[in-house]
Image (cartoon, rainbow, N blue to C red; front, top):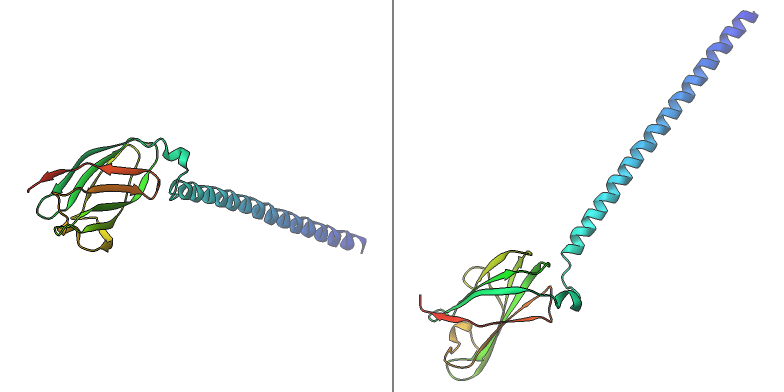
Length: 178
């Protein structure tokens, strides 16, 4: 009888140790998986935050004071009055969403203003062609359409990026007939 009890006790003891080992393994696997998920989540959040920070709409005045760009050309088609210009971004920041404002007089001598949007961006160190024929969206027209702008009168073309709204780019354009 004593031998049976001892064997039963040994079986119970082995089962309990097996159960304890299984529980410890389950806890260990859970901790490892949780750690992996937390590290991945933290990195994912950091990456998303970096992308969001990089694409912030408005930069500080200090950051915008170091703008460095070149207007490679600006052409106005005499017939259609459409404007094409090429900008090279030599700054370390990415510019996005440009508003073009045109101020002048129409063919009748009345003041006119036209506002339009180029919803595009220029990465640091790259160039971008802006064309009213392809990626320009008129957002506000006061008085008349830009096609009625009298180019023989005084006019101004200004470009402002949503990234640096207080930095105005003045465009000096050449008239072309083709």
